Length: 440
Picture 1 (cartoon, rainbow, N blue to C red):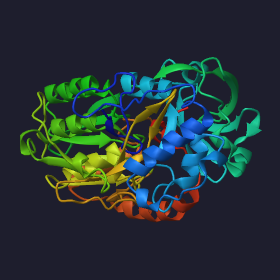
Picture 2: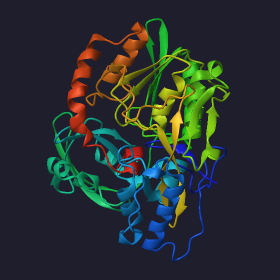
Picture 3: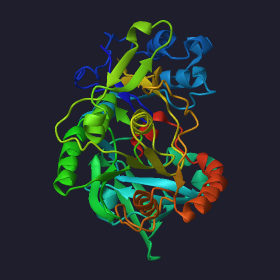
Picture 4: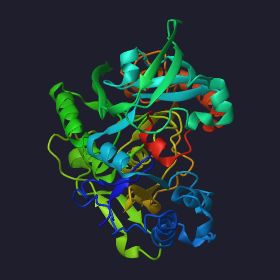
């Protein structure tokens, strides 16, 4: 059995649970001491890729004995013209914790590169050591692990400076607050929970009452959280919705299916949401996922989505899957670009997530490897809190709801995005698991 998901990209499964209905399960082949040797793990990855990998025809065939780890083998053979980071290997423990409980081991923050030598905090999660130390959205990270951020970005060491995902690992942080105060602390890694629905609100916009949901990831706890959020918005009489996916790297297919069904309601029920197409060895796996009939659906006539380059996989599928049935306006920046998904394959204490299928909407559209463009450009305004109506992206979204078009400011912001996007692309995590998690 396999797990179908849409992770950082569109991928992943409930490895710990061994499946969860029609849309999730994981292959767990038997293992022995020999199959868990380095050569056995490399062989497992090679064999799996040559069967299920969407671009299996493009795989080179180097000598498996020449690799020090399965991760090194995957890096060497992936189809780099499109798959520079989509396929990945992570630990079973990390996968299970995230998809089952929305948890990870870390200090409890997310950050974004905002300049060639600059990192800023985008989100701090409750219960983590970052929150306990007083870090907050918008703070500037100056040094990590005793090294200046500018140096870490230049050398690429930023990808590993936080250390291994182990409870008790410490890392020294120096930062500057929005008020200009310099602070420092030693943070300790622990099990941190990411609130899947991190904020909700209701705003007036002309004659409409606009609901707002800041949605962080597509994992098991998300379904109950979304049901609660939509019920709260319905009780307040919302007529429109702004869905904020700016840091959402993806997750499970059936959670995306549930979300779009809550949005579309009677207008979409029974219609095709997405179509999955596999390589020519696995055409029997091709399938169609339809909108559901779910209690508490709003049945909205339109949608505004806030997105950034960190919005990937399932987030992009929500936009692409709803567009055949309603106007969906994207606000912010171009999304990550991942119209493909993965299955999870357990081996030893790890999980392999190779790109396994293309994800198209009801019209067969799936051409967004370069990301889904923003209809109305807006900054991710780190000087203001999430859900603040004056925050640049939310302000633009509310303007669109009131006026049915982009603001004049959006055109100027589009030019800024075009100038800085290429430079900052190098600051994105190269590891597929980290891109999906988007947290440290």
